[in-house]
Every structure is written in structure tokens, then in C-alpha cells.
Length: 225
Image 1 (cartoon, rainbow, N blue to C red):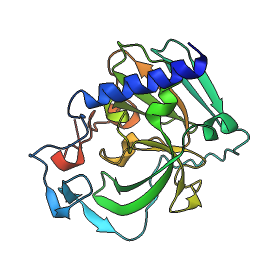
Image 2 (cartoon, helix red, strand yellow):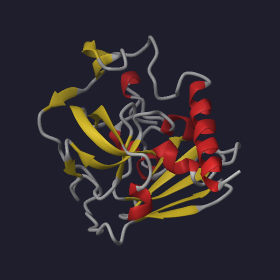
Image 3 (cartoon, rainbow, N blue to C red):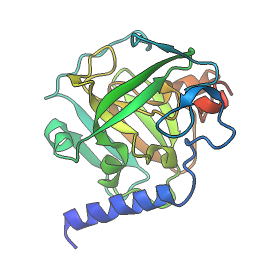
């Protein structure tokens, strides 16, 4: 089997894992919110949220400036073959555009953004995660961390995004690359991402250590621990 065949097989394996059951980030009939059904059949605006026109900026107060030629992404931890991607290798991966909404735990939602980038599962497959891997810690250049279940990250709309609405992702919003998690509150998508650490078991990231939810499900009003 060639390296390319092994990567394809790893992608298919992760996709099959996602399809085995209801994704942990996909609301069920208990989903609460307002407005007509969204693209996934849930209420368009999750409970406790309101739609905004502008896209506010929230972060830890430090905006690292990383040039594309300097950017890299390490994928390691509970994997068979740790890998580090530079910009060229990242852009050589399958590129997709996903229309998604962006829900901030501070109660605002920015609707119908067109995110372009690489599905997280396609990048993670390069490192061949261990079957025992259950969670991921996302790391940013600013020192930020957040934990997400691996199954939640395997969804089609969870991206390593570099472009939004046809424009390069700005520094303020986490460019050159950030993670977007449309079915989770937005703090679960690290800005300026530079590492995806696969884990056997779970542990809290920055906001989780400060009282925020480990799971962050918007349609369940799942904000705090």
C-alpha cells in the first residue's frame, strides 16, 4: 500500500467513525432556539443567542502575526505518525467551502458565513490517529488551548479555515488559519492554530479550566461547567 493509499484509508476510517452514530455536536429533538430550521434542521438561532450583522472580535488580547511562509501545523499525540504541515502542504490538501453559522458564548451569532479551508478530519488522517484516541486539544500561537471530542471534529463542516466570504481570514479573526466548529460555541475553534494534539481521554483547555463547558453545545444552552 502506498503512502497515498494509507492516507485515503485513514480518511475513510475517520469518516466511518463519524457516521457510526449521531455526532456528539449534532442536536437532537431537544434542540432549543428561534427562527426557521437551519441547514441542519435545527432552530436557526440557538437558545439564548441573537443574530448580529458584524463579526465581533473576542480573544485573549494578543494577536500574533504569522506570515504564511512561517506558519506550520503539528498533528501529534495519540497518533501513529506525527506530522507537521507547512503552508504548501496544507494548501495541497483537499479544499472545501462550507456555509456555516458562528455562535459565540457571549450570546451573539453571525449567520451564513462562507468558510473555506481543509476539513479537520482530512488533516488529522495524515497522522493516523490511534483507535484509542477520544479527544483533541487545539493549540494556538497565542498560547490558547481548547478541548474538543474527536468525534465532534470529524463533522463535514469543521474546518481549518483560511478564507471567509472569499477573503483571507484576517489576523483579528485568527488568520492565517483557525478552526471553526459551527455546531459548537465558537471558543472551541482555536484561532492562529498551530497544533492538533490527539488525546486518549479528555482534559480541559483555557476556558474550560475557567468554568466553561467541556462540550459547548449551543442548542442545549451548554455554556458553563
